[in-house]
Structure formats: structure tokens, C-alpha cells
Image (cartoon, rainbow, N blue to C red):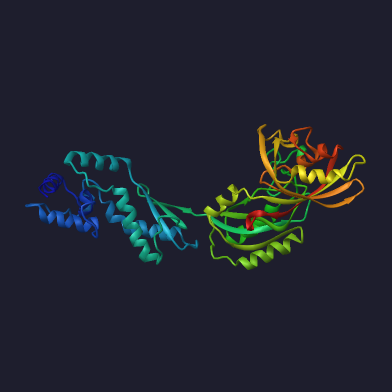
Length: 406
């Protein structure tokens, strides 16, 4: 106690407001504001001077705490038009003030301190909780008020909005996300016929803009649980996705209406189901997920073959590992690596002359086309090699994503 009184006595050699005096002993007791704590400390020191009547005379804060209400007013005004349920406050303090405070702590020997920045965050936050009738959320706030005390400005950091769903794609000419032209990067050039993109539309184009419009956002992003080839349909239980909207003004969306709008606009080409609110954590989990997938793949062999060899395909590949070197068709954009994947199950669905339809369940990341034709030996074993006749893939459909029970 005597040591703290000595620190307080040394500190009070300079004019200090109660906030700045109390902050020297912030970790000593709980349940008090620094302003209240400063009053108690001042009353414990014999002959202690009164707090400056003009807070701008405070040696440390220069009257900053007299402006808390002003900063709260700015925050309320700046956030007008944004819907949010929770918030957090962050502040920028003049570097000279921060340095002066830290030097002062060393000068008086204070070690139980709290920074001026931390107290400003809390004091503005307490006032905003009352004025906005919304709680502070330290973990996942909808809104962060970045208060620049140097220039009396408030910048809003608006948390993105996330919407989950599953999509079905009934087109063989559509990528999952926008495929910008590699030559002009969206500006328009002869390579892309001036469109700036390689394909007219995408799954993202059917979903993202509708969610963004309803949320009154400024940008949208699309995150899928993997992606199918452009010429492959996505059928069955659909592929999970999360649509992300940046700087949304509206957060309470009519998700049923959004789902109907997407399906009406998709006209059977793109359909969605299960639209519901999502989170950043779920978005990351979806992007990192590695669930098995089941495919229907139609193959045409380039010569007559012994149909009995199809039984050998099933026994040779089912529940067996396969080694796949990066396919020739994607080698220009992916590292040349060898990957080991497992074919969990393979069955022959139909046979007609040289045409065969297989149903294949395989690990995430398996190149199914290459599993069929072998990719010049880069996938081993493969169907063409087992049958002994080259083949080509006619059609490929994803008919199940294994995240709903494998």
C-alpha cells in the first residue's frame, strides 16, 4: 500500500484528471471505472491537488476523456443506415500521447496500468451501448467503430454477411465462379471477344448478386465445397456453398424469398436449396472440407472389348488406392505433383456396345476423367489400361457430396 501511495504522490506532481490517475492502478481492483478509482486514489494522498477543472490541462490525455460523448455521437451518425445487432469500438490515439503516457509510467514506477487506448475503447463502448441499445461483442461483432481521435473521424468496419446453401447445376457449359479472361483480366480483349470473361455466366452469377442486392452490400464472393468441371453437371444432393456479402446494410434477410428468386432466375439451370444464415467459421470449414464424392461417368471405348473385363475393373479399383500425377489438362495452372487417392466404390450401371456408364465414389480431389482414360499413364491404375482399350469420357455428373453421411 505504501508503494502505491508513493507512486500516486509522484504522479500527482503533474496535473492529472481522475481517468489518467486511476489508470495507473487499473489492475488493483475491479468494479470501478478509472474515473472512480482516480477519485479514491486522490483522496488517499495527503495534500493531493484537485483534478484540473479544465480536463485539457491533464498532463496525459490533454482532455481526451471530455470528448467521449462527441466520439459516440459521431459513431451513431456514421452508422445510420446500417443494420447490426452487436458492435465493438477501436480507437486511434495520437502517437505523442501514447509515448508520453508510457514514459510517465516509467518515471513514476507504475506497473499496474491500463493504456489510454483501452480505456477510450471501453468508455465510448459503454456510452454506445446505451445510445444504440445494442451490446458490445468482443468475439464476432457485426460492426466495429474505428474512432480516430486525432481527426474526429469514425470509420466503419462492417462484418461480412454469410449465407449457406446447396446448389445444383444442370449445365455442361458453366463454371462455378466467374472465370475472368487471363489475357485482359476482365477489361475485354480479342481473346474473350471483349467480354472480359471466358464464360457468359456462372453459378456465382445466379446466386451472389441476388444475395448482395437483398443485403444492400458492396461486393460478393462465392465459396464452394470444391468445384466440379465446367462440363460436369452437379446433381443429387447438391454442392454446399457459402455466399459472402461485403459491407451489408441489411442483415435480416428473407431467405425464403432469396431462394425463390435464385431458382426462378436459374430457370432449371441453377437451383438452390437449404438457404440459411451462415458464419465465417462455416465458410472456412466448407472450403477446407474433403468429403467423398459420387459420380456418374459415361465412357466410350475406342474399340471392341471383352465385357468381362468390366468385372476386373470393379475388383481392381474398388477400395483401392490410385496414384495420380497432376493431369495434363490442368498442368498449366497447378503444381506437378503425385497424389494418392482412394476409389471407395465403383459399379457398372449400364453397357451398350462400346459405351459404358460407371458410378464411382472416390476421395475428394480425385480426377475422375483421368481415372477412366489414364491421362497417358499419369493415373495408375486406370479403367482403359485394365480393359486394354483406350477410352474417352463422354459425360460426367456429380451425383452426391458425402458431407451428409458417408
